[in-house]
Image (cartoon, one colour):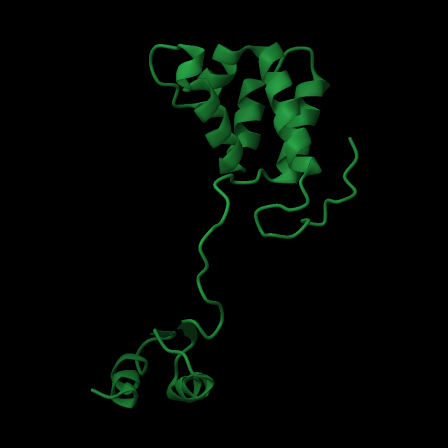
Length: 154
């Protein structure tokens, strides 16, 4: 079946269609004429392998958690959890740290509130300070840019 026949059969009744696995520019313009709305393929961006094993933390989330930790004498665990859920890399780093065999803990830590309680408020503040300084000192965020946060001040 040709692309024209597929487009006529599928895209006619649908409000939006997806065209996958195509490369040349002429296919893109022709596909648009056939009624395709969404496109997926190497024409826009070739997939690349990640070169680093570290997932950078989001700078703005780090700053918000630092502010939350410094704001009160007693740490609001629910607010910290809410903020950490915005950045999976922070959660991963915290859980990886607490589940490290070097700490000698029995049982696996799987959630943020338990991790914060096990670590303790003082140690959590120290940990987030270190992670935030490293994140803020690095030149890039997850998007590969400086994230517009090069001038963030605490």
